Amino acid sequence: MFMPQLGNQHTLRLKRISWFLVAICASIVLSACSVTQTVSQVSDTRAIQDDFDAASRLQTNMFAIDRANEAISSQTNTAQIMQANRGLMLYQRVINGVNSLESQKAELIQNGLWANLQTLKAMSQWQIGNKEDALITANLAIKEAQDLQGRDMVLLNAIPSLVANDEAFEMLEDLKISGNKDENAFKIWQRATALYEKAENELSVIIDNVAHPQLQFYLQLSRLMVVKNWEESFDLDLCITDSCEDIRMAKNEQSKVYFEDLLLSRYKATGSCDAVMNSSFYQFWSLKIGTFNSSKGTFKKVCP
View (cartoon, rainbow, N blue to C red):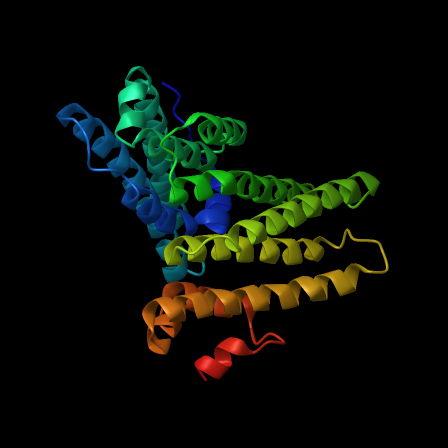
């Protein structure tokens, strides 16, 4: 069986891009599951769901390790790699588990489970870095799954944007490591920022058509990460046009607007300013974004 392994670079990539997203995604995807199942299906699908949930929790724990250890020691780094490898093993088990149920496809569709299992599979493929497989699974599920429900449909449609974000981030990480500043590096940077633009635009369209509060939060947070990655790509000093600084400033302002949108969504869901401002995602992103009042200033009017 394929067993993915992580080195330090990939560990940090997972931490940077999806430490918080996948934990939220787990609760969304798993809550969409039907209860109309045979005894056999209960056992099989529960095992798959448990593996996905456990993998997402490991990624959240990786972030907790980072927050508790700003200066990462070799011991902490080893712990991260061990947790990440365990998480990847669990995601691979999800993929294998879903594949093993192929012969029960008709019955699973009838019981409203097939599309949800395909969503778990696609998200797991994305998490272990099998981006092309994730796109294939998502596209096929959208075309073929007769039991496709709202939340599954939204997440499957979001896969291309999540993949585009990862691809851009990886391209720019390679540039950082190489230190290249030549014309080819500039072209790579251009391709990466085009992917960020694609991901932002596609996520914005999806968000505008989503009413589910937790799913909207997940997608808004995904979009914020995309735009912040885009803004930080200018730190490579590869942009050589006259509009570089204007674009960077625009992305900085956009990240603040998206952060406010995110905070307002959480406020609407909880009805409490304290609940929002004491949350881990608020503390992380307010530090990352800095003075986050956008030109709108909406959230500060609600929670001064």
